[in-house]
Length: 370
Image (cartoon, rainbow, N blue to C red; front, side, top):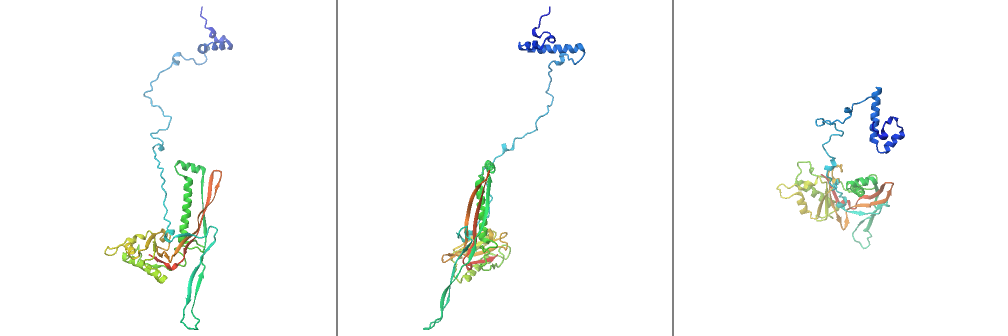
């Protein structure tokens, strides 16, 4: 008599309820095996289906040591570049040429940003004398007054920055908002310095180099930079000629020990190191010995490409009787308007303005093209 297999015996004749009962009783493995045996026997008996020998279903062990596997990733022998990158947090600013106008002749505020024109008073003593006579009525003195004026020119520049922009620059350790403000101030001051030298076209607003009241410029004996005939002696004599011109224009008011400034281009200034024939002194040493209160300043505006007329040298007597010869004049250095706050950005207008350079005493300035 064949032993009974319990709930899994003859699964084909059992109902779904019987199979479920066997599964619930913990005989799932036996149920699955019985199903396989029943299905295999059925296929062999009716000749349909595919029947495998048990040996084909047994696990097979394969040697893989000599088989080259195919890579599923991209070949690489490196690491992300930033892991080997070092970042220097020090900021290196691009330099601009020095702003020298105010250093050469001084600077002062006149009016404010509401001013349209600035007016100045000049007075001159005039008159004549005559021979004395008890009843003579000739001879008189008077004062002549003039009121020259200059127009105020205002100019502006916006600064702006966005929230994400500030955040991204912060990743590079850059205070972007502060740098935007510094850049705006620099742009305005550079424009002001240029106005001090050349004024503003179309307005009664002139600069130190193009004021119409300035006397005509002299010509150097030989070009200081390009002529082989130019020597320390000829260069020094050219500077002496400039001083003689000042004396002639001022009727002797200016003396050799008067406070003076000689302004020229940085490209020209090295010629002052030229030495005399017997290597005794340079041009600069000779000037310091003979003009003890002379100082030398350089500005790029005195030469090309900014000054398109060529290389200019000016000898300026800084002041006479307490009155400055010339003065850079501004109405407002920098006025910051309201900061406009948008959805995710900020914007601000800043304004500067000035009158160019006020030349009070043109005769105290002598110029030379070198």
